[in-house]
Length: 159
Image (cartoon, rainbow, N blue to C red):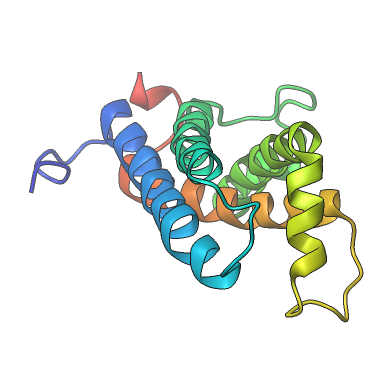
């Protein structure tokens, strides 16, 4: 297979894995889950679906790009971010994913608020739109970064 021919990690492989996962999550979410879960809702328009699809491709690309950072820019080598190979992709990808989804929820607050108001699955958790966006962004970002790090590598060796 094309991605696994070389034994060393490459930046192209990391970006391909991250964007591919973003494309898969965006396609599943925008074109399968949203229309199925919000059947008959007028807020799920084709423009909204394509916007969410393209958002997650960009989401994956940015998380793949940040994979070059291997140590915390604020605390240097004294942080948990630097010492642990297991937690680094989760904190790095999850933090960036949470931030990106927070920005998205600020920009599209009205649509997200009306979507969450129609959800009966999570009726017991009366959380705000921003909390849901941050939690979902952290989970998806962690998954994308963990898979991209596993198959594509990280750090300066990619460059």
